[in-house]
Image 1: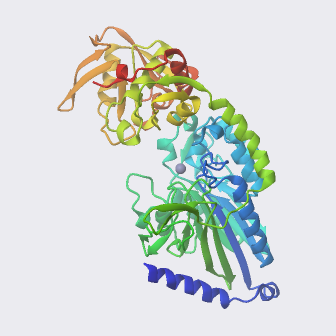
Image 2 (image 1 turned 135 degrees about the vertical axis):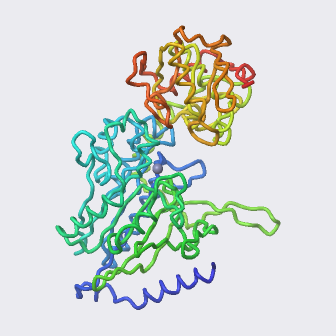
Image 3 (image 1 turned 180 degrees about the vertical axis):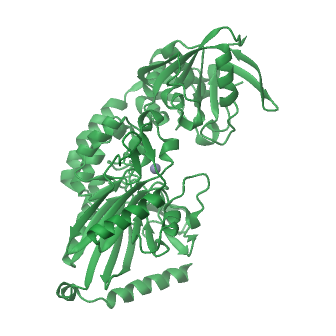
Amino acid sequence: MRILFSIFILLSISACSNNQSPADSLSNNQVKYLTVLHTNDNHGRFWHNEKGEYGMAARKTLIDELRNDAKQQGHAVLLLSGGDINTGIPESDLQFAEPDFKGMSLIGYDAMALGNHEFDNPLDILKKQQQWANFPLLSANIFDKKTGKNAFQAYKIFNKQGLKIAVVGLTTTDTAKIGNPQYIGGLEFKEPVAVTKALVENIKAQYQPDITIAVTHMGHFVDANYGINAPGDVTLARLLPSNTLDMIIGGHSQEPICMAGENINDDDFRPGKACKPDQQNGTWIMQAHEWGKYVGKAEFKLENGQLTLLDYKLLPVNLYIHEQQADGTTKPVLANEYITPNPELEAFLAEYQAKGAKQIEGKIGFVDAKLEGDRNKVRFEQTNLARVIIQAQMNTVGADFGVISGGGIRDSITAGEVSYKDILKVHPFKNRITYMDWKGQELWDYLEIVTSFPPDAGAYLQYHKLSFIRDNGELKQVRINGEPLNVEQTYRMSINSYNASGGDGYPILVDRKGYVSTDETDAQALKRFFEANSPVKVAEFSPK
Ligand SMILES: [Zn+2]
């Protein structure tokens, strides 16, 4: 592995030293240079973490430097994001990622791909975000079901330093499966290969771009092993005719794409180390992990229609690594020379950070032991946190019992004081509380489906005040609140809007008689529960 690396570095260096100087390139129309800078999967991280890692203000300092250096060398510069700006940090979520989109505008992004999490909010919020951004949010494969037309801007043509660059956006078709059906019901996510092939043919005929880039939010899966996910960037590059795309700037799988060899991931990559991006069917594929931890920098030379990657780096943004000490202990040290955050952007974002923190930090309740919300628990077995969540939702709508899918629970709550921040980590998606009034027979038919979802999936059913047996696949002995289910009786079931809209493959309830949606979100309901019932005693919610 190390040998391969060294060869790559040597090749890069020798390629650099053989270059014509920038002065030559300006006098020679045949040779042009492009630097592509990229990030992806910001997920609400406009502010640095407790250790001072990443954050948009330091990112701006680094990008300003890289852009100036590249311009001085006669390079065209493009700054792209692989999408998923939304969702992950309460301070950002509560403000609908306004600081994140405005921060990106101030940093000078040229374009981004729409990620699946851009659909976590209603579409009118996304419209607002498009206004906060002074750059386009691109996706060529999302269509309006009614009109059959592109729902978003599909591509943009850039003219920089005499280079014409086409940038096409693409979004994972998994958005249709994992996005909130309430918000994306009117959108069709088309298979990207056919869309890209046709679109790029048109763009090339109309504009004759020197370089064609796809900025995507589809994920990078080594050797196209995408498993249960929708196919990602590797599949796209392999299935397109070669020479369709020069490079794919991606996101979604939230990894540094650093390869140890052909179709072999470099598991030893660490911040500050060399990184060789993937290349499939002549198309470079790059991704910069997540949260703005790195800025990817790719330097290209275009000569006689031939695009050559001169150098590639994943530049860490104030990341710490654990350095082994002589006495066997480890010490955190910066992987890069400290990057001073840009003071203007830091001041601008600090106001949003303070506003968000104020909204969420106060104590709202108390719990006497841990409430289990770990991903490896809530998708496999009944947990106490699921029961507290469902009780809170039942209380909101006066339900007899309730259900939610395990995949909707995103974090645990530790023993002690509870803040709104803790709750928003459990419930980042702002689903609404809804309910269904129906006869026992209809309910039985519904339960036959949702109780059959297997563990190890987001769909796995969490339930409260409900019991049943599944015997050889057959549903038996259903009890609601301890009483046998009566097919003639009417029951009220609480459920969130995500599952009621068909999320995680649940039967769609929203257009059925007896369905009612409230305006209360799951986070608000859980907050109210802690405010009214603290100290919450975990033993009362222990799954039997
Ligand atoms: Zn994503």
